[in-house]
Image 1: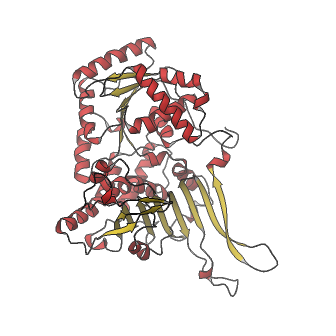
Image 2 (image 1 turned 120 degrees about the horizontal axis):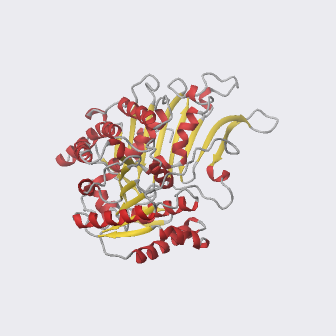
Image 3 (image 1 turned 60 degrees about the horizontal axis):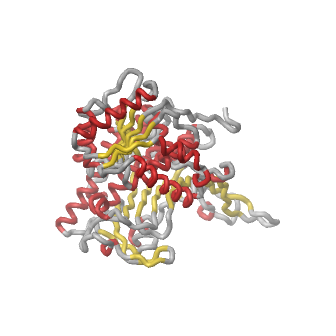
Length: 513
């Protein structure tokens, strides 16, 4: 037991981690820094090795040198201490070796297998476990899986594991997801597939389960009898940056709602799992998403809004409209903002509205979950009326500063009877030792993958239910765009740096966000 509670962190068994697309932005900006921090925290066994799989030719020495410079720069920006930890940096970089070549050719895998066998001999056969991380575009998933299968690298030997980690998007609609899912299951068992959603690695998101199910103070009130509404937002000041090609293909509904937003909603609303393990948690997530009322075409008006940002000013900087971004068609109908009001048709949540909101180029960067409790039924503090008393709020902040805020009504100091709102605030940064930083979400998720704990990874049936919910919305939007009939589902405009489309703000004025 730790000083102030139970610590469940465990060091995994040794493994080989093969990162396909190791030179890409995701690997360089997120995966390698996360692995470096796990190394510094002594959570990577000494025998664990990392294979950087690249299409371009590069020596391991050159790759390590470039990666080392990137890690130092990343640490300097985040306020870490890697710059002064030269020995730790050298030990980490020594774990990495490059595998270069064409991912579609057998020669690449034969050469890699030969080197992996040498690693196994050098470590006295303790590194039989393999993790294949696909930090590449989703159209490469099936090709890579097929080649790994052909060369026997998806087979799990006795007392060892072989798994694959896939980044979103998992298809572009229900039909494309099912096609991709069928192709992956030709080469991997479901237990070997880890579909990653980095939002689920954030401490505040994980803390939802502890907050609800480890405290008798909250769970008895977590239902329609006491909660008036729930809001979930993921707002950004950034635009699409250098991801125009991806964004034009995907859009915000696919990028945020089908995965991040519904995953957060499921953790807020699901029933208590019978046991705290992967299947117990994911079974309840599927039940919850299956209970969300599927929107009919006539329900879109007034319950779903889409928007696209115009030119504006974001935090003192003038920025262009989405259609003026380099590479964006001048008549693009791709949404950069989505807002929705959903209802969950089950006993616990019947009648409670859930407001989900996400967008690019908004006025502030904020990701949070807001639970608004019902107002008091009667006020004894005449002449104060029940509607004059602000309802209690539970706010779980995910970005930019992770923590929890509870808003309550209290008497203000002084001889007069004055009632006002006071906040009880907890920030994770306040409990960290001096010099420590909050771990990145990828650190937790990579560690869980090495531990073969799939609780925070998304199961196939959960994604299928999410696509079944969102595909009718996409189809209605696409049909309106093809007919150029936007009366029912218009593409709203909002100025960059604003709070979002005025029409959405007015319609959802009862939202707790």
